[in-house]
Image 1: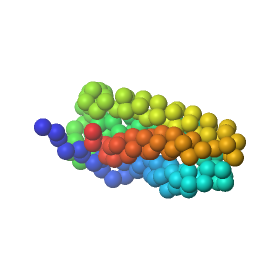
Image 2 (image 1 turned 90 degrees about the vertical axis):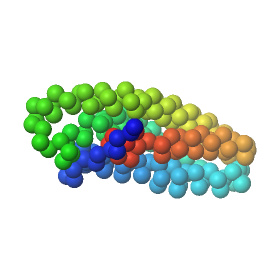
Image 3 (image 1 turned 135 degrees about the vertical axis):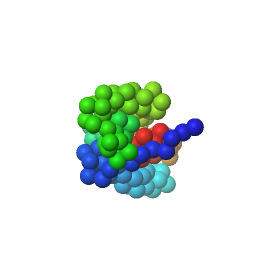
Length: 171
């Protein structure tokens, strides 16, 4: 039986971290990747020789931003943050300190989050590799299949981002 996730109380640092992480997720996945880059690639696929790849050129330069965001994922989503919720307000600080690593360890054991983040890093590496390969091909020699390969990798990466939890303890 799965327990329902507890949302941390508003204005806690965990809530702020989660809100910031979610905002960054929205920017990187939906705004940049889906609404800009995938749209550009779909248009370019129809006319491979006559479409500049401005958004792809900019996207491959954002690798550090994606890696930094991914590296914060485990900490931000940790179940240990539920200790800051009203559910545990009767616990003193010492008790919370003792249980915080236990809750975090339980989160790591049950969620498989490290495996998911590793997979996201692998997908990002593959998408960047495919994107850089496409950018190296002279524009007049690009084929529809070149765009399809990049588009598929980016869609896989985007789907994996979308599959991440949106709340602390939601795994």
